[in-house]
Amino acid sequence: MYSPHMLADYVQQLCDTFRDAICVTDREGVVVLVNGRHAELTGIPRETILGKRAQDMVQSGVFDVVLNPRVVETGEKVSSVQNLFNGRILLLDGNPIKDASGRVAYVVTVLRDVTVLTELREEAGAQKELLETFQALSHEGVTSSQYPRVVQSKAMQRLYAEAAAIAETDATVLLLGETGVGKDVVARHIHRKSHRAEAPFIKVDCGSIPENLIETELFGYVPGSFSGASKNGKAGLVEAASSGTLFLDEIGELPMTMQSRLLRVLQDWEVLRVGATTPKKVDVRVVAATNKELEREVAKGTFRSDLYYRLKVAVLTIPPLRARKADILPLAQGFLAYYNRKYRKKARFSEEAERVLRGHFWPGNVRELENLVQGLVVTSKQGSIEAQDLAGIRPCPQADGGDADYALPCVEGRSLKSIMKEVEAALIRKGLKKYGSISELSRHFQMDRSTIFRKVKELESSKRG
Image: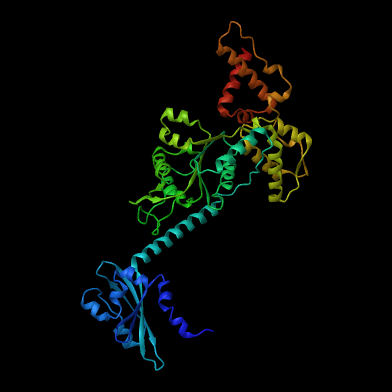
């Protein structure tokens, strides 16, 4: 059966469970109880302080403040700061315990280490900075993606099998491929399949952040580090990705000075904020992506060789869309479903439109396909998207069943320059016939309009001559 006297047997053990130090004195200031934390903070063994008057401890230089007399005199809570002989600074809260007549019988003093409070405050500040960074990322929509993941082709099946195996490790990943092939989608897949799946996935577009801002965006800054800086400082994107995945898209565009800073992260897993003197440890998995040939950039001196070899641990090359034709229609249908929901439409592809989509060369890869489908859904007035709605989209030459205009010219006794000029002329004539205008031709040939215009004029002049 429960008895209040039973609890008294466990008072010492109960007090020892508290995180703060506790000292209980009687009305005369004699110490009657201290917990284990008190000995840790003050450095005074429990046996030494029990039975001693707190006022005597002041006289001997152990303490410089005693709250007991003021608490007994006023009957109210009293707070103060205690400087110990060992250099520690403690925050004291003296609380009165009164008897039935209202007199103070005991004083319970709670002692907190100011150093611990400072650390907690700094930790709270860091959490606030990270929260602000996540809110900004969420507001900018950096982490959103509507790309359907399609693995119909054997090439993509092999790629995703490799990605799944790599995801189980913490190895740095380098994704290679043309612009628009879906490197972002593969990076997110690696994150989702890793043990970091519940942690943040932070995408950084190295090519879109202005050079004068990229250092503070990536690595953050401390308060007062430059004019206009937040008074609280700011966590960088590398810190924001800690415990998760940092996706560095278009890393080939990263300035040389930032390449050095990033190399330190990959070598030591430390981040040094702008204006800081002490680095912070980070636990982050790095996935980088580029459409550049980094070996060529290293040879040109625009990319650090040591950074390149740090990134070149697990390398995945994503094939262009033209090399995985089995994925074209499933991707198109995925985008169609997404934009139908978004714009509340019910568009669908006709068989002829699907044939045209399958036959197109897709120089802009998956991104070109997505933009095309979005435009078709927005402008569609009827339910069916027909071949004539695909302005400028035609089957690539291989799908035409052969064409005399693409036959090689006679090469005997001729220079390569003259042969290439004849081939170029044939292609331009064919292109003008197919696409109808210089502007459309320049878009499909991915050349400047003025260059195409000059070449067409040269052809017209030679024909008149």
